[in-house]
Image (cartoon, rainbow over the protein chains, first blue to last red):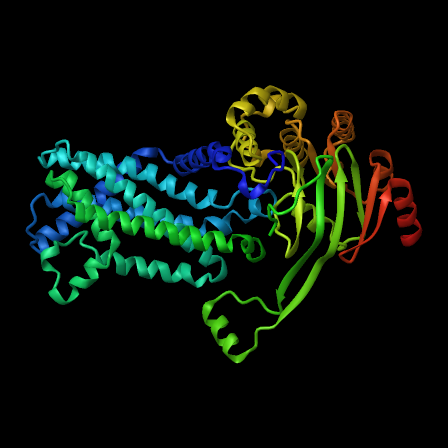
Length: 262
Length: 253
C-alpha cells in the first residue's frame, strides 16, 4: 500500500521550501525599488506613532503612562492583522494562474502571505523596542511574553486569512466589506485610546474582541513588565485555536471548488 | 473524491475509473452577494451543465506510452489536468502510482520580475522539489536550456522560446516515473525540439510511463504504443496505437 501515492496526502514538508521561497520573493519584490528598502518597515510605524501621539496627547490630553509605547505596540499588531488577513484573503484568486496549471496544496498561499506579514511585524517590532528605549520604558525578561502574543496572533490571523480566502472566492463583496470592517475593528480596539474611556455599555464589545486580548497580552509583557494571567492566556489560546480550526475546516471543504471560480 | 478504498495493481501506473467532469456554467456571471441573493430569491439562477468528460475509464500500465487523440473540445486537456491533480473529477476516481512530472503548461508559476536563476528554484519548489535537489541539478538545467548568458536577467525580458526552454528544462530534471505531456513538443526552434524529443526518448528507454496529448498523429505513431480517442467527453476507442490511429484517421478525414 505504501507505493500508492495520494496527492492529497503529499505532506507539508515537501512544500516547506516553497513557502520559504515565496516569502523571500514577496519581501524582495516589496523593497526592490525603494532606496531605504527594508528600513521602511521600521520607519512606517514610527512615523505613524509620532503623528498619533502628537494628535492625541496635545489635542485630546490622553493621560497614559508611556503613551508612545502604548500606541506603537497596539498599532503594529493591528497593522499585522490587517495586512496579513487582507493579503491572505486575496492570495487564492491572485494565484489563479498557478493553481490552474500545476498541482500545489492551496493552503500554501494563505500561509505564505501570513508569514510574510509576520516577517514585516518582526521588523516593526524593532521600532517598538526603539520607542521603548527612547521613552525610558524599562524592559525586562517579560519581553518573552510579547513574542508569545505574536505567536497567538499569528495563529489567529492564519485562521482568519484561510476563512476569508475561501469565502472571497465565492463572494468578492467580502473584500470591500472587510475594508470597512477593519476600520470599525480598529476603533473598537483600545489601540490609541485608554481602556478607561470605554463606556460601560460598550464593554461587551471589548470582551468579544479577540484582538483586545492579544494587544493586552503584548503590552503586559513589553510595556508593563508583567506576567500575563492564566485567564488571559486561556482567552488567547481559545480564540487562536478556534479561529484556525474554523478556517481550516471551511478551506478544506471548499478548496476543490476554488479552481472553478477563479 | 478518490478514496483509499481500492487497491491498485503494482503494474498499473495510472487508473482512471468511471471519471466524469461537469462544469456549471451560470448563464450570466454572478459575483456579488446582493445579486446572488436577489436572483436566488427570484429563482433566477440557472445553471447550464457542461460535461467535459463522461464516464471515462482506462488504465495505463508501467512503461506504456499512451497517446490521447481527439478534436478540439473533446476533453483531452481536462483529462490531463485531472490526472495531474489540478482538477478534481465530479465523480469517479483517479489513481496515480509513482512520481509524476506534468508538462502541461511550461513555466507555470514563473515570476517575471525575478531572474532566471531565482525562477529555477521557485519553479522547482512549485513542482515539489527540495532546494537541495535543485542545487544538485542546477548546472544541468542551465546547460540543457542553453541560457548560461542570461541567468541573472529578469525573465520578463525573455522571449517566449527562452521561457519555454527554461520551463522544459526544469520540469524534466527529475527522472519521473510518469510524464504527462500536453502539446508542448512544439516549443522553441527545430534544434531544441529535437533535444526535447531525444530527452523524452531517453525517458522511454528508462521505462517512464507517458501520457501524451497532441494533434499530430505522426508523433503519436512514432512515440506511443497505446492510444485512446475522446469525442465530446466520451471515450470512443482504445487499444494499440496502430489500430486506434487508423480508426481516428478514417473517422475524421
